[in-house]
Length: 289
Image 1 (cartoon, helix red, strand yellow):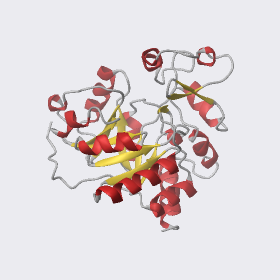
Image 2 (cartoon, one colour):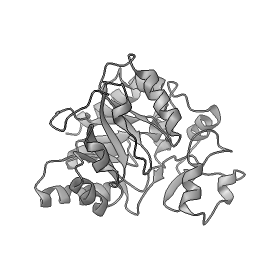
Image 3 (cartoon, one colour):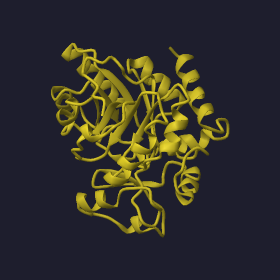
């Protein structure tokens, strides 16, 4: 892999668009790369499958892209032959130092203490992941966590980049940037799009969401409804929850969808495809700052 040094100045723009539900969707990423958003491929929990999808992109995408590495995985990025990889997003602060040798690292954090640890370990930016998000979450809602992390930026006197994730709609995106964030993250909101290659049963379920169809299992927000195996799953050890995370199907997986997925479904009445959605968010942000 072409290594990206820490003095490389590339950073994502105002909108980071991550392939949703911890599902590596390279065709969706190619569509994102044609918009103003910064594309990120979520490698998912199946490392071999995720890396194979990343390698499939080699030679097909000239735009700078990122990858999101779920969980506490320590991959050897030096083995990858993919020169467009410009940064990684890690889930928490634990593996930040492992990846800074090869590229720029942005850490998803669910608390201020995680934010401090990620910065101390060399993260160049943070994503404050609020409790509305899918997958691993903390106790604080997105805007509260963003405000507390903005105060941390002032206290440390460091101008690190900062994006907000969780509960992001048109108005909250504008509010986050107006408050001082560099931008926002879209993930679950992309699930309904025609460019998405998620399984049809999951796409249909997401489109029908009103925001109440999630539950938290040992710190992970997932989709639920009566009749699904996840609806009866309670008090599971964290390792058992993590082992089921994914987007294979509603029956097989604990689908890590955020409450904000319903925002995308609402926007589908006006934004029929990915370019429309990204343009709508860009206009909403620009109109309020």
